[in-house]
Length: 361
Ligand SMILES: Cc1cc2nc3c(=O)[nH]c(=O)nc-3n(C[C@H](O)[C@H](O)[C@H](O)COP(=O)(O)OP(=O)(O)OC[C@H]3O[C@@H](n4cnc5c(N)ncnc54)[C@H](O)[C@@H]3O)c2cc1C
Ligand code: FES
Image (cartoon, helix red, strand yellow):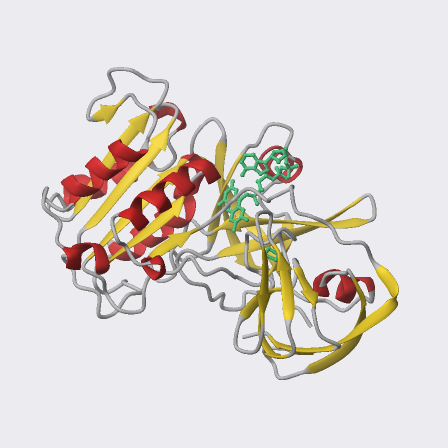
């Protein structure tokens, strides 16, 4: 059911002491389709258990010949260390299909504002490549060539700042429309840089400056904001934007760290629910799950391959539309009850009715 792909590593390129870019190509040389801001899941079997991790594309379709991901090493991290230290050009990775909703708006906005920290620049870089592409390569037909873009980019120091040189080149090439506010928490005296941690007042100040000091209501309403940073920083930024009356629909978040604090329900094998799933291909599958078991886990237990990556409600690989019945989703801070029409995460979704019908879009 799930579409899996084999991607060959064509090239490994070191970006910083901790981050490496992997240029990839489908093993069977088929065309590879994805959108700026999406990610792929790398799948490995480790000690008989399948594990997955998501990596955002740092490349941009149309601009780069091949898709690429950029991986930052996490101390003791299973996948990031294996990818950076143990894989070589010519090796083949098993991956899920491109997924994710950290996408540029369909219609050109008035301005785009990005907040990235550390490896959070990766999906943002893919957007920036699309936005600053020469018109004949641009994957964004209809976007004006003078659309202003503000980037607020926080790192520990210049040495660990991924894609710094290319971002500086854009700032120099498009001084009227490209601004980058650099923040280094552990490096003093770097030119054009604040040696500070970002906080709400500073963020608000940077936002006001990006609008020339006096933003109007329309500026806030018609700008889209993209955040990819540690959870606490994104929470602060989102709250600041909401206070400034930015509509929730204009705030886009990408979370890299799986939430390990998810509540678990007790499984009751005496009660079952009937699940009907329609794939993107139109193929229909029916199966039963136990009460207290997530829809995804119930499917995987019976070797029904539904798409997933994080299994913790952050990556959105597992999103499906509810067509019939009701589903409860257990997030860390709340349980959300959803019915027909809603998008639900099967990885944290429990059937709340005897039958639930879902469709992958
Ligand atoms: C939608 C999405 C897109 C992503 N895109 C990228 C990307 O472009 N580049 C990239 O490098 N990573 C990206 N990630 C993170 C990536 O999927 C892995 O979580 C990360 O590489 C760590 O995996 P690991 O197996 O090395 O570490 P694990 O073995 O999973 O974890 C080791 C320890 O590190 C902690 N940890 C896990 N992830 C992180 C993290 N990101 N930062 C800090 N601590 C962490 C864990 O809680 C654990 O304590 C993305 C994640 C998501 C959900
Ligand atoms: S698998 Fe990541 S949100 Fe469900």
